[in-house]
Image 1 (cartoon, one colour):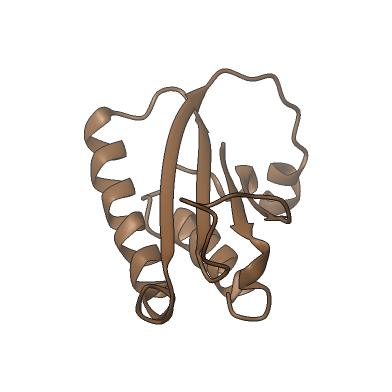
Image 2 (image 1 turned 45 degrees about the vertical axis):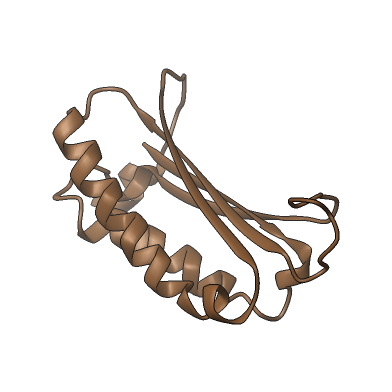
Length: 127
């Protein structure tokens, strides 16, 4: 299980390549994690934040992208550090134009969670 939830400020509408960002994360989890994240358990979703205050609330161009990743327990600290350092770097590179063209903040948080789930997508993928 690895779920990425992207939250982004509404003033990035039409500027942020959201589908590209979502695919970057999903593809990275599927292809760069050495199978640690089973493909059938990967979820990436995004929500536009229409109501927000950034910093002193005086610059309409201030913008943000926040990514929260939830994953099941059991991955080593070494894996988490190496993998998410690299993922953060790839995302930062993907968002580089935003850092250059406006006041922009990016954050990535990772949580290990216990959860109860049922998933028949794995069965389809084994097909």
